[in-house]
Image 1 (tube, one colour):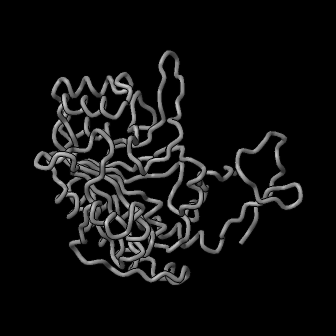
Image 2: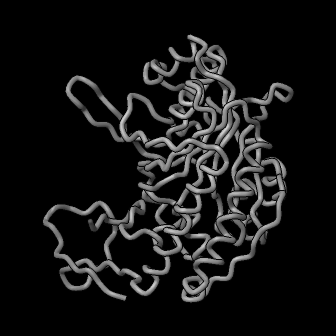
Image 3: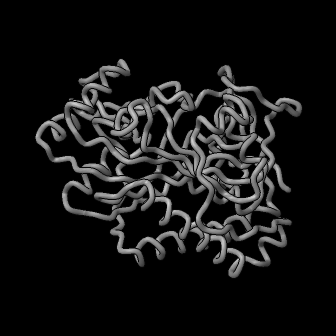
Length: 330
């Protein structure tokens, strides 16, 4: 372990500090850093190879835009603000999720796409100790034209199994250094509705249910963003899903079948009290009938590395920590 010390500035710090004399001390687990980065390298390589082998086209990420995922009214979101910049006469936002861009991409004929997408989500500082929240992270985002939930489930299950096998094979020494033994899960993963999970574990079911399982499982039917498709046969139920890691590691992935019809999108934006003007360019594409049915998801890279390495906090797998409520060192 080594320490980085720097003198406090005269300005008031927004976050609690651990102080030693007049300096703030940040601990870095140097002995874990190298094996974690080697595991991360394997994961990134295998993710790209797997998706390309399955016929996906890799796109470059979008960093700034006129519009981004609102992450609301999802009750699981705690984003305090969407960061904005002014560039000449335009106001742009930093990307929280490329979901709306993915819908447009598949509508343009790119039927199977993926992106290693950096996301900025300025989470409430109270998320500091959840173990799974960052305010800057990377997702492996993907979208499939004409797909349904079952198609995504099968793809992701194969991906998770493939990555775990690769890490166990290529990073045996690193796993031993970290004291981590990972079991290869069996396909298909269990599927539960959020209603079943709430009934068994209570409203805050995620970590309790995760700790109660030894293999990943799916949770379906969340009432959240306007772009997730409502089940046409069951009003009030939604064709969306989260993948949950076992052993208390919690959410791994979030996704859904997408709504593509203009009238339905507009109705739900208004229902949720969102600003129609913010989504004007996206709504215009929907109005023109350009959007098509699709399904996809985003899997958090750092959360996957955390699960594979068995670390207590997702910030522990970042070289440059971006944990809500912690000061940024560099």
